[in-house]
Image (cartoon, rainbow, N blue to C red; front, top):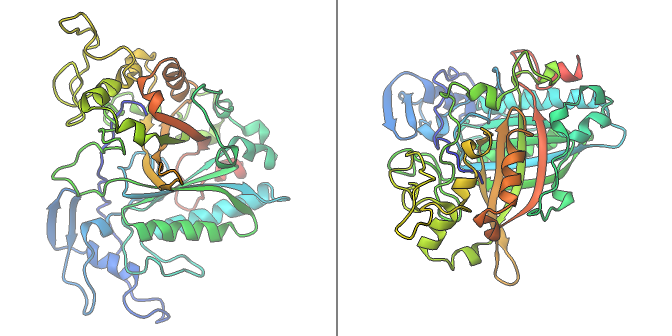
Length: 432
């Protein structure tokens, strides 16, 4: 859990679809698209923490969407959605394996179906075929759907020559206790939304679209604080109660693009990965019973930051640069030498940086009363061998937090750039 920050809120896309008539009267009431059009019409502007969204008087019998429901992310673009967008309240991660006998042709047809479904659902529309109606009363709720390819995908489809070197399997780490059944996979899907039903609806649609071409290998559910739940936008807290994400790279940073995304030229990666990124996915269980036995001061020493406001122990506010050389009256470092925040600083790791975009999870309580809870860690970088790997190796050698967490599942996925209008995700790989 690197010491980097990410904005909690997502700025909705201002241009929302126009109101349209229902689909031939086949569904009673007001459709999701009609509601979305109502929310996007010109009118009163709400200046809430979740962003400004306009709305006007609704048609008879319809209720205008709130700002949360009306938030929309565009499917087509330079990069895939769900990477630089703000944290969402609900998330699902899933890996699929291609079915026996399925190859490049079947994979291309699947990505074409998935992309068409993602475009519709992210616009607040129903799935094209056999929609479940789970989300019919909601707007898009900032839904994002992101697709990636695992190392095994390329041998399954006969595309080994197009497999990036950056997708080589991650090395073993001493803190790993990995469940192979919940790791890796041919294909990876990340779903996020600010409404739980919208997120589940997308997960179900993607699973149904897989048909006979692919089967679910593993699936995980996560959550974050709902945008607008705090008095002002702020860094999210994890299940240990710490502000989690301070010093995350920001899109406004001059070197953000080159750190997070594969360049169009000058890269050793194949051309189809231009404007793409690499996602490292780790299921990190937090040993909360042990953690919660620590005093607040002891917890802060493990992290290197104040629990109340995220400020470094060396002083200041959350955004104050950490003074790694400051000592106390006894000559000890104010920020301990094994503090998590000290070890994960980019300037302590050769400039290694990654964009963290995680979800918390809670999968019940074990028979002995231990909560199965923690972090679905997702980080993005242009090169995992320069981003995630060196930081994790250093954490392996002496991070104070390691005693209170356990890495239980892992995956690395190549996430191609965004699809242009008329394209599907991965088309340049599968039809190149």
